[in-house]
Image 1: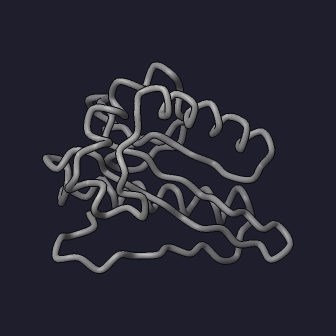
Image 2 (image 1 turned 30 degrees about the horizontal axis):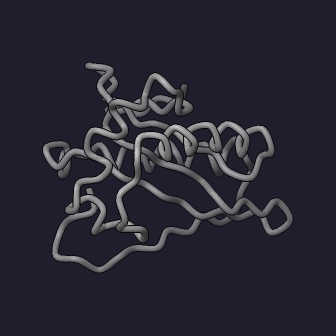
Image 3 (image 1 turned 45 degrees about the vertical axis):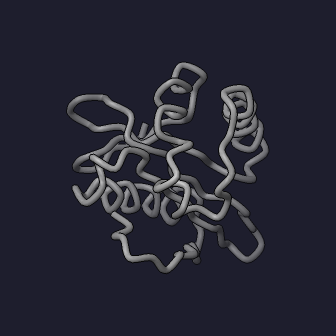
Length: 138
């Protein structure tokens, strides 16, 4: 587990499924993502399992974001497309429930994830694509 000031990051587990799926198909959240179609519970279960395989292969690292004090699920963040020759990766993040937006959780999770990428994986470049919307990304 990796800790920030407000959040802790840990590998996604099947016991996180209910919390992940609770807000995942919310249209407002999905409008911030590059894939707007909803996912079924089984698809999310398969996705969690696929994160384990990617972690073993070293091709991606996916973490759940939880509130450090309450231990409640907040969202997901990841480093994907790892290129160890050019020492770079892509970053993704989503704080799932709108009630948790704008409270600094996303910012803190990004700090922890960037530290993991730069300090533990020895990356030199981490990229984030941002969709232009009228809403804040944190």
